[in-house]
Image (cartoon, rainbow, N blue to C red; front, side, top):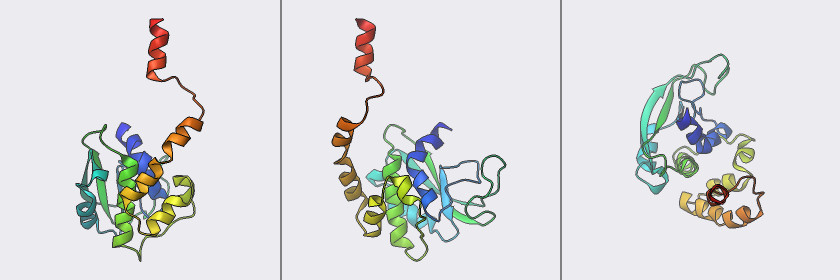
Length: 174
C-alpha cells in the first residue's frame, strides 16, 4: 500500500534488528513487534514526541505467518508478538525515518538485553554511524540533527536526475 511504502523509509531499519517488521502479516512495515517487546510502554515513550508527528501508534498482538510469495519465513514465525501498529494521520507531517530512530532509541533503553543488531543494519542505514550513535545513547533529535547537517553537501554533490518543479514549469510556459 502507499502507507506501507511511506513507512518503509523508516521501518525497513527493523529488518536489521531482531524485530518482526510486519512481514507475515497483512500490514508489512506498518506493524512491528517481538515476543519480548513492551509495546504499550514503547508507545507511551514515543507517541506525542515530534518524531511521531503525523502518526498514531497503537498496541497489537499478532502472530507472523508464512504468506506464499510474500513472507516465507518471517521473524518470529508462529510466535505471539507484542506489536505496534502505525497509522498515518497526516502523511505530510510524518517523518518515518525520525519515527524509526526514536523507536529504536526507546527499545534500546527498555530492552538492552533483548535487542540484537544484525550485520546488515549498517547497510540499511548507510553505514555504521546510526548504529553507533544509537548504541551510545544519543538522543534521537541529536542523531537526526547530525544527519541533517550533511544534507546540503549531499544535495550539492548528488547527480541531478530530474528537473525541479520550477524547471518543469519554465519548460511549459516558454
